[in-house]
Length: 164
Image 1 (cartoon, one colour):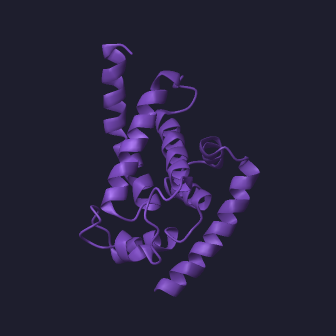
Image 2 (cartoon, rainbow, N blue to C red):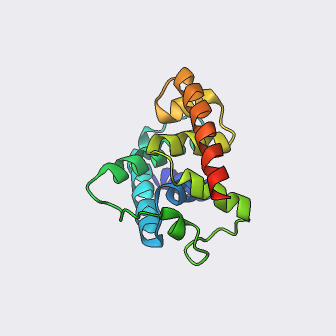
Image 3 (tube, rainbow, N blue to C red):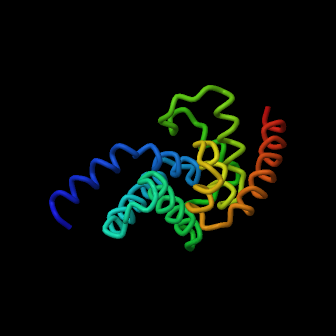
């Protein structure tokens, strides 16, 4: 990789690092796990940066790498400590570097209870990505995105109601 490519990589990742933070906050519960996943995502971005052709926006590509890495890491044998009540850590003010109001805290709590792919779909939807972008990022069809979103929205509504 050339010096210009390295500089471009650092610039783009720094500019879009909030994507990595969001993925880490959705898939991990402890600060240590978040840091580990952040490092792993950054490493995977670095390894695959040469393959980024610009066919999609950098943020879409970055989401794809970050979500695939998060899902893969959580599938491995016990990579992160499994916690019975993840919201207790996820929403602990000392463990959470974001200043969130109560509604957002409840939303994160509810998202924490979703399945891995559901988390990815809802995270992208909350980022106002189109169904096509969500499909491209997650590797599922546009129709499947539509179906999953309908189901996930209903599931989230139920979870949020229970958490309030």
